[in-house]
Every structure is written in structure tokens, then in C-alpha cells.
Image (tube, rainbow, N blue to C red; front, side, top):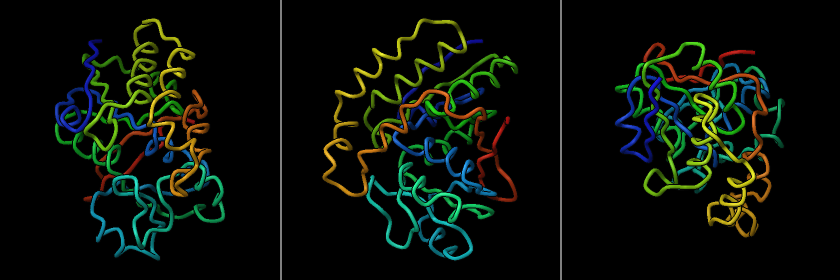
Length: 230
């Protein structure tokens, strides 16, 4: 198994083989929570007007350059998803739109054979599924800040997934020190923007909270997140 480490929008477009698209803050920390709270289907979309046209038929969750999108039900926040809980999501279709993770997954689908949607919350389950299939090439893509600037939480999560696949050493305490010192985390902890809850990093940095992975697949002209595993 050969590991290719890639980053940002260009990395998503370059992904080949089995792609692991990582967005820790916050897209692919949100999606396992959506399934946990009972969503029946999660659709990935970059079409904001198309999403809004589905309001009422689906729950709209997402952001544009971190800002809440007018007309959406929730912004892209794990803490807000937890607060809403099953009452909002159980049995519902969710349409998810984000600047980094979702757009990166859509780009990776153009050339990769398989696309996994990863964060710390699903890292081990994702790696377990990939290791069992033993693909020749795994492209690990850290999506970063708005897909244009590297972010330590995504790069470190990539290190963790690589370690799970290959046995390469990984130190989560060292990773946390780097992540917590960086502005990508500090902007949450300051608590001065209600759409960036200070609770989000505490959720997003939990390792292996879920025993299932998420894979992006094309179905009937849509891209959906499939829950793979328990």
C-alpha cells in the first residue's frame, strides 16, 4: 500500500486510488453526528441555491467561508448538531454544504476510485476498512482552511490515519499541542463569534468516537455519504 499525502483544493483534484478527504474543523466531524442523530440520508452539495430550493424537504446544514448561509437550518457546527439532536434529524434527509470538506470530496470523486470522508471521530474505522481492502494507493488529502491554507488539525489527522494504515509513529499529545496553539482552534476558544462555538474543538478532537466510516458515492445523480460499518 503506497500512501500519497496531499493538501488543499489541488490535493483533492490530484487524489487517485482510495482517497481519504479530511476535514476535522468541521465538515467530517459533523457528518457522523448527523447519522448518530438519525439522519436517513446525507447529500453532499456545493450548489447553495439548489440546497435552498430543497428547504422543507431536507434539513440544510452548512457554511460558506465559515459564515452561516441564510436560509439554512444550521451552520456547520458539531455542537449545534448535538444541541438540535434527534428531534431535528431522525428520519430526515440532510443536505450538507461546506467550503473545504464537501467541495474537496466532490473534487476527489472525479478521479479517485473510492472517497472516504474522514476526521478524528472516524479515523480508526476508516483505516480499518481501507486496510482490509488493501488498495495499491491511498491518497490522504488534508483540506485545510477554506481549501487554500494548510491547517494542523487536518494534517495531524492525516498523520494519525497514516499511522493506522502503516504503523508509522503518531503522538496525539504532540498533535494536540500543535493544534491548540494554532489560530484555527484559537478562533473557536475566544468565543467571540456565535457561529464558531467554543465547544466545537472539544468534539472534533475526540479520537475514534464512532465505529463506522463514511464514504462518498454517486447515486441517482447525487453524491451521498454512506455509513460503512456498525
